[in-house]
Amino acid sequence: MTTRKPLISGNWKMNYTHLDAIAVVQKLTYTLLPADYDRADVSVHPSFTALRSVQTMLDADGIPIALGAQDVHPAESGAFTGEVSPSMLAKLNVRYVIVGHSERREHFGDTDAFVNQKLLAVLKHEMIPILCVGETLAEREAGFIEDKVVGQLEAAFDGVPAQAAEGLVVAYEPIWAIGTGRTASPDDAQAVCKAIRSWLASHYRTDVADKVRVQYGGSVTPTNIAELMAQSDIDGALVGGASLDAEKFAQIVRLGRTAS
Ligand code: PEP
Image 1 (cartoon, rainbow, N blue to C red):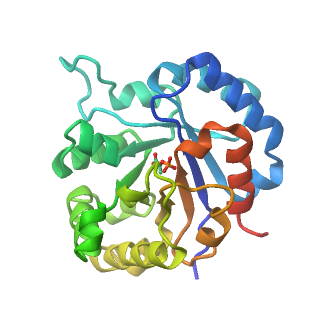
Image 2: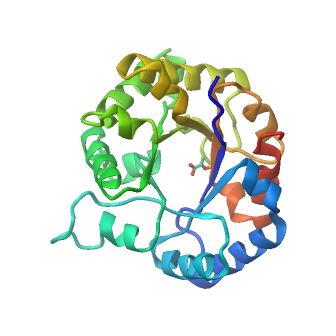
């Protein structure tokens, strides 16, 4: 069986100035130990205005926390007021880029096709997409969970060769669990994460599916991370609210990392 190193990612959303961001990363580095980094990859996703400051700090001090972005525009450059291109992120040593977060899909009209363009652009610039998929409460209640998620996967992975697909991260984020304090039960989360891996195996190959890291996201806290991480197809977490608090986020990393 392939062992996948967990990836614990903090999505700070529209919070923190660059000064606050530096303070949070500083606190995180005081708390996290070499054993934490050995047994989990950790990424933080500040807002665009804080990326440069956080990058400078991580690079200068050799801190093994990966820099992540929350979104990207797929075009290389051009008349896209307010947007940020993949090469701008790559130049800042951004390693992971979230694409298709449900808040982007809901509030900013990101379609499946646009998410696919973003994902391809991130790969082209040798960064790693964290592709978010997940169902609404109404879809869950209508039994439309796997169909929704598989539809999102089919669109997002369009044109992605197997060699690139295996390095990707997929975050299963049931929309009703994001920022609500409601978490999918470990069994329910495992069932969808397993379905994601099965889709990857049938679309590509089993060895590709075995390498893809599947995160769970939706009200993850220090209290629920361990039982989620005990599931065989959950390889990490995309954490929103709880990642804003350095102590809580460090606890999540510690409890979510592999045992040895
Ligand atoms: C998220 O932003 O992706 C998220 C899962 O948020 P929260 O942890 O606050 O539910």
